[in-house]
Length: 433
Image 1 (cartoon, rainbow, N blue to C red):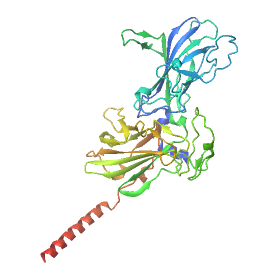
Image 2: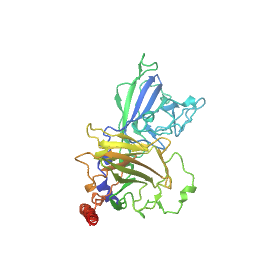
Image 3: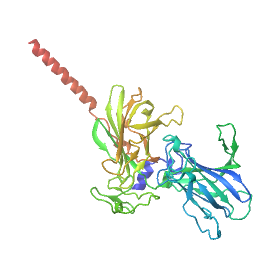
C-alpha cells in the first residue's frame, strides 16, 4: 500500500536528485590548498549550501573522505575528527589530531574556545538554506596535513567524499580556478595553490523509502475535511513502524538520547502515520481577496524541528498580498512563472516546531488577490499543487477527494432570492391594504 501511494503521489524528481523548484541546488565542498612544503600542506575546507530551501539540521553534517596515501591530520581548527585512530608509530612528542585513513570530521559546538575557532564555524553542523538565513549557509575549517612521515612534495586530493547526512551523494573532486582571498578590503589579493570542488546532491528517495509528511484539506464552503491519505507514510503494524497511542508514553523517553545521533522516529498513531501533517484551509472569501490558513502539526514524539520551512506550489501565489506570522519568499526560478514560494518561522517566535503536544504546531494565514480570469472555487483550484516540508515532498490527497462547492449552490441562491422578493412583495401588499 505504501509503495503504491509513493508511486502515485510523489513526483519523479526527488528520486533522481533533481528538483524543478531548485534546479541548481547543491552543497559544494570547496577544498583550497593554501600552502605546500616538502612534507606538509595547509588546507582550507568550506561547506557551502547552495540550496534555496533545504538545510542541514541537527545533529549536523559529518564530512568524510578517503586519503590516497598515508596522510595524517596533524592539527585542525574550526572542526574536529570523531576518532584519533592508532598513532602508535608516532612515539614521543606531539601526536597527530587524526591518523585515520577515512577520517570523519564534525563541526564544533557553539561556544568553543576562541583559539580553535575559524570564521563560519561552530554551529554544531547546522547549515541554513540560502533564502532562510544567508549568514549561516557556510561552514569553514582549516587543517595541517602531513604525509605520514615520508617527504613528498606532491599533493594528492582525497576521494570518496560523503556528507554523513541521509539522502546526499557526492561526486568526484573537480579542480577549478583557484580561490582568491583579501584581508585588507580588496587592496591586495592572494590565491590558493589549488582549488577543488565536490558537489553533493540530495535525493528524497535515497534519504527515506517512505514520505515524511502529508497534507489535509478543508474549505469554508464544505463541511467535510479531507484527511491525509491512509498509510501516507506507513501503516500501523508494519515491521519497523513505531507509534504511540494517545495517552501513552513511549519507553524511550526514559532513556538518554545521543545528541550526535538523530532521535528515532516515533509518532502518534494515526491513519497516515506521518511525523508532519500540513493542513490547508480555505478560510474566507472577500470581494477581491481570499484567505487561507496553514497549520503544520508535529506528530513526532521525540523530535523538534528547528529552522523548519514549507514550500507551496499554487498559481495564485504570484498575487499573494500579505502573510501573517510567517516569513515568505517567492521561488521564481523561471522568470515570469511565479507560482511557488517558501514559508518559514519568525525568529524567536515560531521558528521552532516543538514535538507532539498542545504546542506542537505552527500556523499562519495569508491573503491573496483574486486574479481575474483564473480564480475559481470550483474543481479544487484553491488548493495547492505541491507541498514540501524541509525539502521533502508531502503526500497530497487524490484530486477527486478535494472539497468541492455544493452542487445546489446556484439553485439555493436563486431560491433564496425568490423568497426575499416574495417577502418584500407581501409586505408591500399588506401596507397597501
